[in-house]
Length: 169
Image (tube, rainbow, N blue to C red; front, top):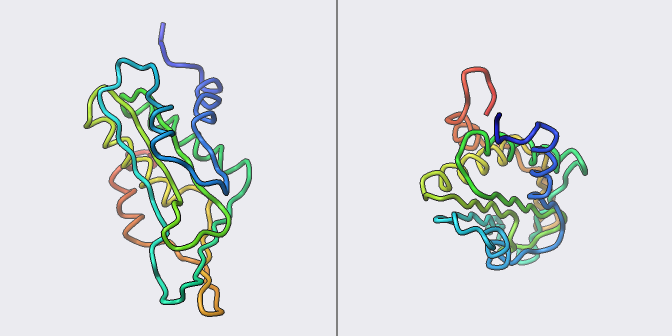
């Protein structure tokens, strides 16, 4: 008998690891909660993405929009695939939405595992697919003008390295 949870149960467990919100997050608190009480954790890898300066306008803002419900499910499905692929103990994905200023935190991907390589690989996998597949849209506003941010070829190339022969990450 397999120890893996049933598909619906795995998705529900993964949904508990996802937060999409305008609220900021505390890296230390999130990592502490992720690894709390798990004596098998030997590695913690975290990635925090921030809004970088793209305009000399000090009032520049990046606004992130999403498809409520669909976004959380998409991230949870990604976590399920990551857990099937990598031997990890815990995963947390937090993505902010709404208006964000330069230097604000946008995203957190945190992974725990027994060994560092699995944690690093899982975190990279999650970020590469999050950048290319998650239903988020970015709009930059500066100097009285606004533009939607197009996806970058380099992000697609990074995600392609994880592509399985059947087309699934």
